[in-house]
Figure 1 (cartoon, protein in one colour):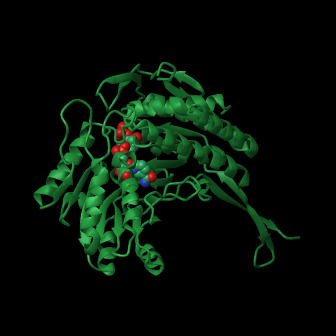
Figure 2: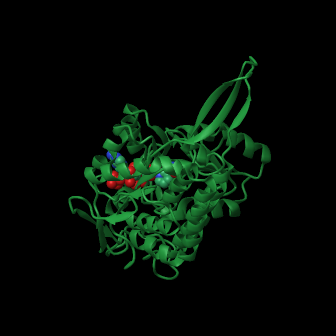
Figure 3: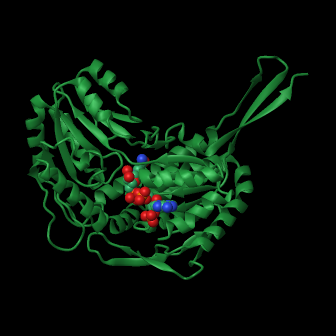
Length: 479
Ligand code: NAP
């Protein structure tokens, strides 16, 4: 903690907020204040925008190999400092250390992946059909970007955006969530150490998100917004981006169905459910939100899932042997409590958990609800907590209709041993990603993203860098 920067990172320098404001960062396991960081306002945002705009031209001209090697060096530094970064993340966000270490590796991998992509950006050329003109196609960085990230994956949500922006030759301003600014500040220090030129990355930590971001989006110099967060905030930012016609990538909320057919391997289904539900204490956009289980296997699935969930150890993420850390804050926990109470009022049975423990810290126990009514609020609200809600179904068409009956479409999980069914159900689900007999889809080499109100665009994979590039077409007469 002692070496972690707590100031804003603007133009390659660590600076206080112009008005001297600071904000507290809390440990969700104790409720205690860990430290204070700079709290940026509109003036700081303008300075960061100046720095990003000034650095853009030279950065775009920097050799792709040079950009690639900065990412590669940063990848190696991150891995070398896994323990330090994992402790930092656990202290500000709460996830158990083992999961934080996993996130450090996942986050670093975006830098390795995009260090490889930076040198593979290709244009094209050819003679146009009329034979009179040649077409030369080149790819250009879109320009200065605003990157806004949530608190649930404090390091990986940053590298998933910074990696492709650096690879493409864009400069940027990163605005992390106020609950978890420290991981982003540590990342900025690592990129500086890896040789990133001043002004390419600027980090503004703030409790005044609207004051900082709205002028940037409306001002005309920021050319790209990459946002990860809730659909409600995404919608607002899309509207703000319309004025200056800012290009947008939106990774928004989810409401993932997890479907277990009667021919599923229940060992695989329960293993998959533990990952799809419990990764990050359920605080993941990919978290299974609605478990649809065939009537013939629902009882056994519920019993086995409840056994596994009930055996998990809840406690501070820094303690050895802990599987489930605290939720991010009291507001997040109160929402989970309300959703469970509502489901129970409408007839759900609690197989395990369901009771908030006494004492400090924002803990909530792993919970399994069965006989959940379709009109329960958690059916159309992201639970964002360790609660598995089980409903039953009898028929394939029926379950597909119910799974798709939501404005979201990020990910779905399908468990069946039948190949035809696996493929046809996956194709009929209105989602950007499907986990087929697995509870984990996230991988830096795969395109991550959703359809419907879960977002626009993809992060990671071969297409991840496209979000930060424009085409330029040159018409050249054939002589
Ligand atoms: P959130 O409330 O939407 O906040 C996300 C980020 O947006 C935070 O940095 C937040 O800062 C900022 N923000 C809020 N209002 C803003 C405004 N008016 N102008 C500019 N920035 C603003 O979401 P969250 O609660 O942090 O994160 C949980 C959500 O993220 C869930 O819905 C989850 O599904 C989604 N998520 C999606 C993905 C994905 O890849 N699809 C991945 C992870 C999480 P403040 O807190 O200061 O307002």
